[in-house]
Length: 345
Image (cartoon, rainbow, N blue to C red; front, side, top):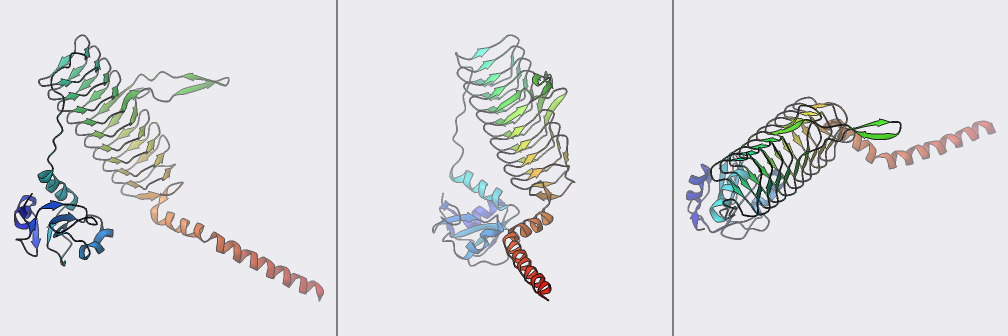
């Protein structure tokens, strides 16, 4: 790549501060960048690097008003940088085409135009797959499952029977959709399996990371709303409902029948008990343990999860426990000395 800052700003619909004729030949992170590179700042904690980076230019938010380096001010620096990356390193992944001879296709299977099925994939009876969808090698798709158009299913994904998946969905390797919900009845000390006869519904534009498990509902459906993004190693239990455009980060666990609203963020390793709700726009911080419902547009953290400002105060008190213990010990000693003097009198 060899472009001027003016050309890149036009591509990004951004505003230039500084020399618009600065020549850009590469892209890099702000710490690693060298002369000729363009970099970006999306997280305020990296703001001190604006004057330290060796990059020739920086993509920033529109809040930046001055810099020792030329900048392109944009609405979303991360998205703008991703667009620049697409110029430098366009996506060259070549997906399978056609139906591989080793694929096993059942009866009454409907395959849309340009569907691709890789080696040793198994598609059972009465499955419907929309046009342009790609099923990679080693995948299993159970009977009466429906998959929409232009969906991408990477190798070794298992999609059980009677699952409904929308269009433009991406499912990464190792994920299991529609496994049995974890339901048992304890009778005289023995765990008896409760049949899980529901399904899973995944709407359009959802992305599901590697090694995610989404259990089928006991009745009705487990539901993932349009545009939601799920990171690797997430557990979603039976009858969970997740709204639209939510973010579920790695190793989060959601217990059965919990309802997650729209535009919710569950950070890494957050754990939620069952039968609660998390309101629209709420944020659950990393490693939080959520034991009761969370109102909309609320940030909670800690265990048990509580409003973040309260959690910070509690944590501050916990950090002071050693000092408090020492203070109490000293007071106890002084009280004992005073009591001894009083007795002596």
